[in-house]
Image (cartoon, rainbow, N blue to C red; front, top):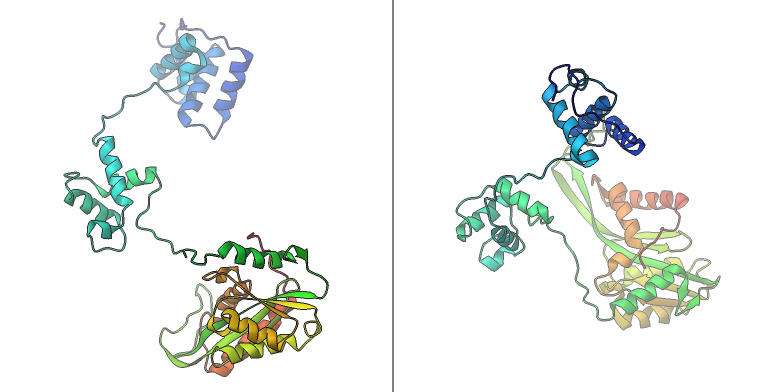
Length: 363
């Protein structure tokens, strides 16, 4: 092999496909830099440049140029790949790593550890205390868990379905949202109302006035407050026509909910409608067959439809209540309940001006 600026005995002649692949690699910003360097070396060698000139242009040593010129000549494009490397031998056996992951997937209480959930430090301590390992770092434990996306320090709340008729009850409500009932499309004189109560909206009078946002400063709300009472906000939402009805009451109950129903059912088009379906959860104000008999006895065209137990998330009015919580109630800074009621009802009118039916996807 020639040295310095002499002619190398490993001369390269590229096929068109190889030249295209090497050119793409040499110009790419997505491949590892080492692959870019190797492609540029081979292209320079194919152009007849000496090793020393290629080394200066690419920014490597002449020995590096000789290495990849020789590799390409003897092995082709595959020679530019990294050789398999044995690496450092395993410090921890695979079975031990699996056992650590198994502990991470147990609740601490099952091992008589008085914790609600594992942290990395607590998990490491338990692994050592159990005699599985004499020593291990939290960084190593984290790396093992990340291999399988195990995160025992996180938790998520959920509700286990308790209603044995969940599918049937949910399907009936979802069909109403889609515009049908018992397999028949709803007619022009039929409406779907979603209703519920938002309880205990407090009036919290701050001990010092709230400061508006300013340059490089967010709104500031005093931490201390005086309680000035609480009220309930009852609302009904026309699912297909985006109409909103609401009222404030001192508390929830059968009578306050009855007044909300009357507020809707005494105005058109609901008063003369063929059927008005009311979708409600299983709250005490409208629970069970007694509520069906009571409300349908008072309003001949009303049909009460109950959600499955613990399925308020299927009630569309809850979407509106979440908007109220974000835009009206938080941060809570009201001098008295009259101010709370005035803002809730004013926002209701404002919201209805631009409201459209919710883009419901759950089926």
